[in-house]
Image (cartoon, rainbow, N blue to C red):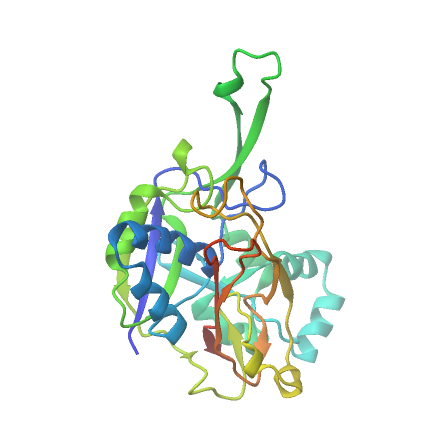
Length: 307
C-alpha cells in the first residue's frame, strides 16, 4: 500500500476550534481533514468517489501531526514506562516529571528511545517550539451601526517558519488535487477571514512500523482518532489496551442541510496514542441527527504504528 506524507506550510494563522472561539489548537483530527477535502470534492465532482474510497479503506488519513524543520513528530504512546524510568522520574527534580506530562508528541525517530527508557523529556520539551497562539479582536460589521455591536475575540495559532503540520496518507486514491484546492480555501475555522490557507508538499514515505489491521503485530498505537464498527466491538478489544476517549461534536457546515445550523450527533472516539493489542479498522459514520436532512459524515478510520 502506498504511503505518503503531506506537509502543510501555512501562510496565515489557523483556527482549530476547542471549547471557545477565543481558543485554538495547533493540530486537528482526521475527521476535520476529511470534511474539508469532501467539501472540495463536491465542487470538483468527485465527492462520491472520495467517500467510497474512505469507507472501503482505499484511502486513509492520520490525524494532523506536527513537524519542525525535517523533524516529524508522532503522538506520545499511552504505555507504562519501564519501572526503572518511572523510579528515575520520581527521584529526579520536578522538571522531568512536568516535562513528561506536558509532552504530547515525540520525534518519530526517537520512538525507540522512548520505549527503552532513554528518552530525555526535558531536552525534547525545550526543542518543541512549533509556534505561538494568538488572539485577534473583530467586530461584526453587520451590526456595526447598532448599539448592540460588540467586539469578539478569535483565537488562532501561528506556526514558526519551517514548522507546521503533516498528515500520513495511505492508499491509492489520488487526493493531491483536493489538497491543492484546499490550500486556497483553507482548513479549520474562520477561513473567510484568511485563516488556514497553506501550500501542500507531497512526499513518498516508507515509515517504519506503519501497519494496518491486516498485518498487526503484538501491539500498536493509533495515529488517528478512531471508532470501531459494531462488528469489531468485543471484550477482547479492550484486553491489555491503554487508551483515552475524546468527545467529538460540533455543527453541520452545510447550507443545504437545514435553514439554521444544526448540531452533529456526539461521538466518543479513541484518541491518537492509544495502544491496543487487537486491531480494528473503524469506519465513516453518519452523525446527522436532523430528520430528513442529507447525511453528515464523520471520518473515524484507524491508522496504526507498531511499537
